[in-house]
Image 1 (spheres, rainbow, N blue to C red):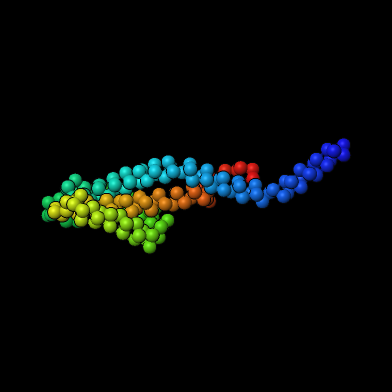
Image 2: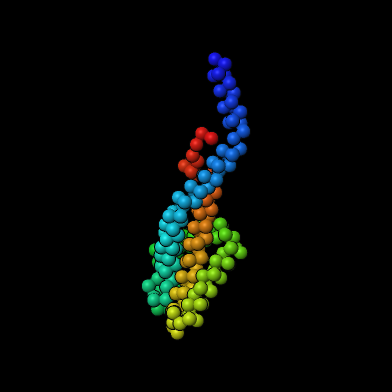
Length: 184
């Protein structure tokens, strides 16, 4: 009986002495596990954001003439009073979608972070143009590159929030499904 009590006391002391190390190890291990899990998720999220934002961008306006803007303008003789209810409704939908996209993308990075991303992507295109990889003799190419720059900047902003949240194991208080009870 005394051996059993001594063993329990010894394990209790050992547990008390190693608790800080276990807490640090668990925190580091959780962070590494979350980062490793998120690499694929980040890439999937970035590709999905690029696709969704590209659709929104190029359906709103594109240099080739098949967009909402071209549908509204028509041959240039249409006035606002001659717009159909469908055109007005789709216009309202586009404004709402752009508002959501901007909030979704700009809020994680802020104004300065967004400007940095736009500068990086834009300067990358400038290097490609100056190196001769991209021909900008047509104005439609410049418009297209500007739209791609905006799409990439917004997609990176949207992905940054998700990546930071996953890497730090943060949860949103408005999304109860993110909360996991580990029993810790």
